Length: 207
Ligand SMILES: Nc1nc2c(ncn2[C@@H]2O[C@H](COP(=O)(O)OP(=O)(O)OP(=O)(O)O)[C@@H](O)[C@H]2O)c(=O)[nH]1
Ligand SMILES: [Mg+2]
Image (tube, rainbow, N blue to C red):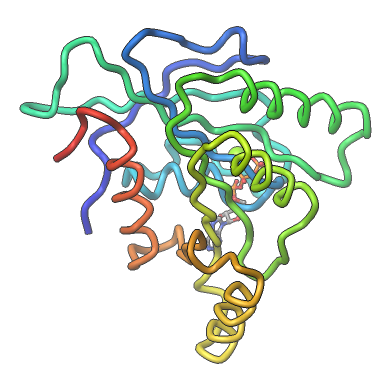
């Protein structure tokens, strides 16, 4: 299993205007509903346990969290910055409606305004169906020409029969091409292809 180069926490911001914006900068963002597994995925692909605080309680990540990829040795490219961005989860029913709306606005504004976004990793529990929120992000990305990887988390929770049913379902929905089932708990083929896609989306970071 090949992981990302070392990653470290950089900063948190309550809105996109407080986010880093340098000229040679690449952002890879992780978005999706609350408790889907965004923070766990960031920790898993960088092989740094608990790097992005993982919540047992949904709705923990309420700020835009920037993590900087710190390449070592030959991979260091002067002047270039690569970030993984952990966005607040949406759709947590127990959160007051106004706060839910605020978080959703924060995510939408980040997506709409960020010129440095090279890849959107949309995370959804593999057992759940694509909801209106996910569909909205997929449609928006298609219209604006942004690349999306649909990360289907918690693949470890399914047996072989369920896995093949889910794959057929995604095929029927026309989502099989962008869907990558994976588990954050242990290295698997899906996790590897997410690492590879993130690396491929970071210019100058080829290993
Ligand atoms: N079994 C299993 N559990 C997972 C996986 N990914 C995440 N989890 C668990 O799901 C819960 C939520 O994970 P988080 O990474 O905190 O989810 P999040 O999307 O960052 O949640 P918010 O910050 O609330 O938006 C935690 O208890 C994780 O341990 C996975 O691939 N398999
Ligand atoms: Mg989180």
